[in-house]
Image (cartoon, rainbow, N blue to C red; front, side):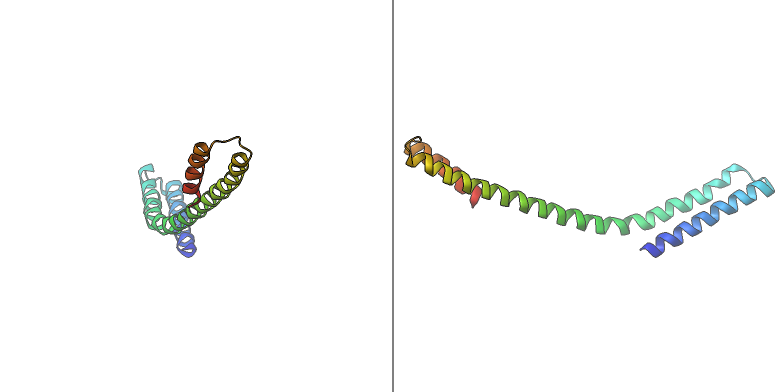
Length: 111
């Protein structure tokens, strides 16, 4: 892929230098600058799809890693909260109904 990028840069640069040379020496109209510009656009059309595939893969794997880390963190926090609510229930601060409601919501996060 990098080989094609370098080749496109060399060809596009060469076309631009030829344009500048012919413009200075032969005084061709400025409209011919469209040739190197069109080549540059065609080169981008060739290169961008090749770059897009690895980016999609990288973004997808990063997204999965972040999602997994967030779920793991939420599960760990829910387990800690479950222990804390159990202590509060054992001390009599929480009623049985309140404790069961909290346990049900935390179990959903863990599982």
